[in-house]
Amino acid sequence: MIKWNSWTRNLGACVLVTALVLPITLESAAAATPATSNGASTSTSVTSSAYSSDGGSAASMVATSATTPVNTDLPNIKILATGGTIAGSSTSNTDVTGYQAGALGIDALINAVPEMKDIANVSGEQIANVGSPDIDNAVLLKLAKRINELLASDDVDGVVVTHGTDTLEETAYFLNLVVKSKKPVVVVGAMRPATAISADGPFNLYNAVKIAGTPEASGKGVMIELNDRIGAARYITKTNTTGTDTFKSTEQGYLGVVSGDKVYFYNEPTRKHTADTVFDISKLTELPQVDILYEYENNGSYLYDAAVAAGAKGIVVAGSGNGSLSKLSKAGALKAIASGTAIVRSTRTGSGVVTHSDEDDQNGMISSDSLNPQKARILLMLALTQTKDPKQIQTFFDQY
Image 1 (cartoon, rainbow, N blue to C red):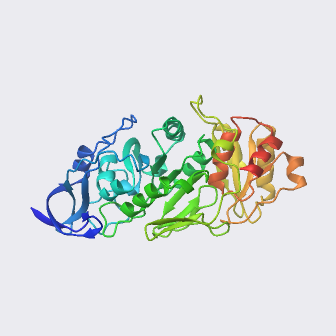
Image 2: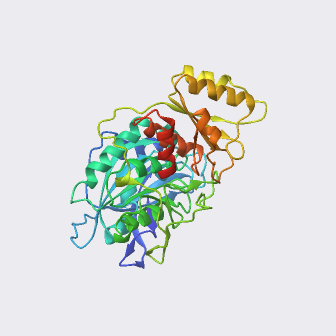
């Protein structure tokens, strides 16, 4: 079958070309772009390709091979893929909720945006290929170690990580604490799968590569890019289940924007990050278990007992209001502290600072500052690799 592909561009001008449509099902997509997790590097060439619809139902990929030589005037950007919606696929181009996340590999993602060859020398590796709810500590450590290896090389100017949006902010904040380089790291995702009408992934990926290759992006910590906005990993969070404008930094604001094919920075992250943190994961093979408990009316202490029994070394409480705990919940927390489990008070409100009190010091509790529960969990995991002293852990929450 021959179809028109309007995604292909020639020197910035829109043109129409004919190309052979190769139907992609969930099975053939996986076969065409295997979801390996061995970190092997893919070809550094960029292939001109894009996604289109086949009869309004089956997903297809239009592809024409075009090897791109290395341009010494452009930055060298490595894309590390972990799966997610940005690599999602469905048999329907109107399906934006029932698709399979992580169905496409790194080659397909790079090939879908041939325009990247005009702004960077791009190559890719597949770190994982899962929906982001299945990102675990093993993947976090593997990803962070690989980024540190890459950024230690003079041949790499920046790294882009493709990731599912559900837990994207957690991975980004983890990297913000353990990457040992000032070079740009940008985590990017999409809210619509690659096969959807008006998929947001290709432009998000293009913008992320552009940011990673911008000299002004150095020293700003790990960044998140979706919907043209540049957010600091420490401050930005997902706020909507399906909307494309889901990532927001409502209180601290954005670092900048991408507009008119230019990167604009307006703010700097004030908390310590990347090369300025004390955390070193180079020799770690696992991370301490930290769980999150949610505060609500009529709750009890038994969930604390269950978490400790299951091996939790730390517990983050998504407290009500300013990190408040009920009497029974507080009793469970104090019992957990007595057993050697660290307790951090965060909030379920979605914004605001959980203030530290004299009572926290008396009880050996830690307050999360403005970190939401999921990010507080990330910091507590890393803090516990350094110390079990709640006062020392509190200094980490005050600094990072």
